[in-house]
Image (cartoon, rainbow, N blue to C red; front, side, top):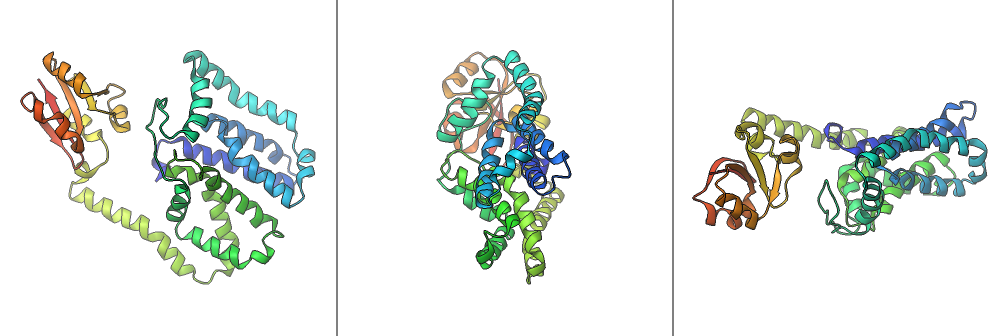
Amino acid sequence: IHAGVVSTDTSLAFSVAIVMLSFWEAMHHPEKPIWKYLIFVGFGLGLLAKGPIIFILTLPPIFVWSLISKSFKKIFKTFPIFLGILIIVLIAIPWYYLAEQKTPGFIDYFIVGEHFSRFFDSSWSGDKYGFPKQQPLGIIWIFLLVFALPWIQMIIGKLWKNKATFFTNKWTLFLSAWLIWTPLFFTVSKSLIHPYILPVLIPIALLVVHFWKETKQKTVLITISLIVPIATIIVYSFALISNNIEKHANSDKYFIQNSCKEDIQIYHYNTKSYSSQFYSKGKVKSIKVTELEKELLSKTPFYLIVSKRNLKKVVPSNNVTLKLINSNAKKNLYRAN
């Protein structure tokens, strides 16, 4: 899914992978110096992708693994800390500086707001580009068990079976620390979405490879893992053939591309959607009932996108001046005046 989504979460997962795998390679293959520098490149890219969260998701599992494996002192002998900090600064700081110059207040919003306010307050009202995500505590573990099915279940079983040697096998210990830390960190947050598990999909894959030779039910696992993507392709193909994509799509793309032909204002009742903002090139604006009444009285033409669950709040009192011109399973598109 997220290979085809414009999301910084995939870039963050890539950066986390660079950091973690570079750390492992540098610690175990000191004859290849590229790894001890590449880890800092990963930190720099992570700062560009999604900010200081790159340190939060990588340093704790590295620290825990180093303590348990008694490799902590080796870290300072292996990695050029001061040169590494310089590499991070050269990669990330110029962009932060330019972003702050272009949009004053950006650093406060991005560092304090997006990293601390969002994490501790799911009703944070300062989000400029998204919406509050109210989730039950611990939902991250459900995301992990569902979206990594059946591989995470296989790994849990294998780790339990090999629990006697868990702390002596440095590779599985390292991958397990990497895997466990991210969902553990987000357990106490109510403001999260399922892509937050993306950074741990790589240790899951590497653990599957590690245990693959001793796995007996390979065919069953592969079959289960293929059910969801194959079913998705079938459903999508059926929707494409029957021309129902526009009707069931969770997007305002088709409203804006197919029906908003005139160059007039587009409004989205209540909170505007990501898709309406994107496909209207930022032209769409949110509107409340009181503001809508004023716009209707002004007799200025405009389009209005309304979720069907909000129709009773908007349409009954304005059905004379609002003309329905398009509709899908979730929303209606009206033209006013």
